[in-house]
Image (cartoon, rainbow, N blue to C red; front, top):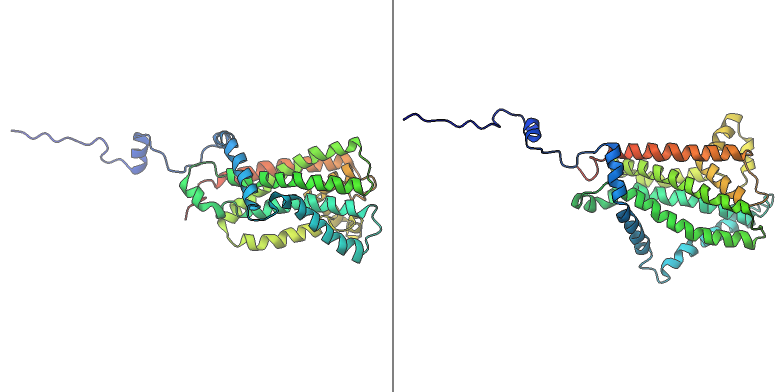
Length: 297
């Protein structure tokens, strides 16, 4: 009696061909940019809830709790005023207290977001390896957390500005779009450093020095008129410093006689919007391209 041999239809196929035949895909495969954006939007409630949880947890062990959201920027402002307003006597700037605190609070928004964003992937490896979700949720939640803290700082800033004699004008409304542009810029930078921080754990050690240097180049603690002493090309470079731009937009909105390096308000808005667009889109694309890398190795 003849023996009939059954031939397996998968015989001779490569692993890629087998996967395609049975509808299998690579685990953690990077989706298209449009699909990734759609998934990220679907996780918006998770991002908001995670940001709120991080904000509450950051003050859970302190007796004064979330009151530190107000006390921290207020204490920092007092220390810097003691050094630069009293010891170094920056009397050439009208209402130096309001000038200093405005620059300090606006800069601190970016600084806190960037420093936290550097570790947003590396400090959440357990979550990344356990659950499947768009990894951009983590750095974006960090940005939202810092934005919530900024709102508390703005309450303190408004109180300081009014207490030091600045009038309440319609010009103050300009602060809202300026902060929104800075938030978009921050989100893009945070996505950028989140991927870099995931690749190199040493970045979190270097980043504080980078941010401190950035602060001194943004006219936070002293009059921006000092930048006029630089060579022409260097002054132009400082004028396009994104943090200086956002600080000057805030100072223009809140203060009547603040010295500004950029005298053209139109230029300030264009540069501020340009940086938000470039950083926001560029940072998002750069982070998306590394989606398959996070949590591996």
